[in-house]
Image (cartoon, rainbow, N blue to C red; front, side, top):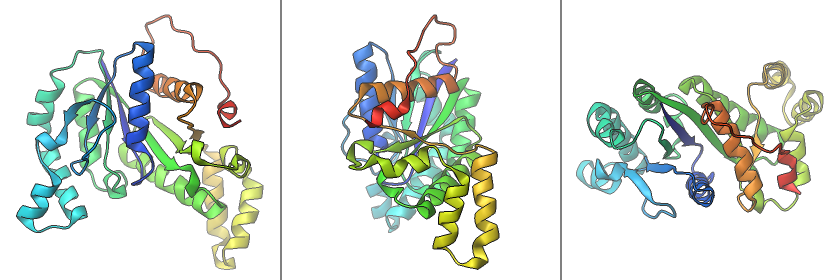
Length: 268
């Protein structure tokens, strides 16, 4: 049984920085993880790359050969990856043992994890290779400045959850850059009545029923919640990693005890 994180989220949400900090944290603990670059446009890395999609296909080469723009070329590259799941990817995965832990650093094009089937097929291939996979969705905490953006972030995350059908951990990244964390408290532990009132104030009366339905989705089904991630604090990374490990049943056979941790402590 192998284990994997699929690190997704909008461009600029801090996915590669998260991967780098996670690698450093695990290295300090003496724990082995392997980070896989799935972004054909990436150039610089702050972590050792175990597997690199650029060995299969490179964004600049595709743009030059086919005259495509960056987004079109990236989609072409990801479709090329999909076509090579049974060849290139299988050969690369064969280099790792059954209990290895892989972290896939994905591109930030939102269509890859909202409606295009490339990543879903990629995940299904990993599962056929006996990997337990968890999606780690990053959202920039500086994006959550009002209730409308919070709902937008929730819906984007929910779209990825439905598309990928994986255990899902949502992170509010870049908490170390937030100067006033108090305004985020309403979104970490949302009160639906308060948020609905604020949402109705910001939108026209024709959206009242839609607003109510959206808030009920977030509240009644508990489908989307966010964990704050402050990369300056080892306890924050430790808590996030524990949540992900639990989702993919990593180390369930080992006698490991994780200290109780309140994520709000990381924001003080």
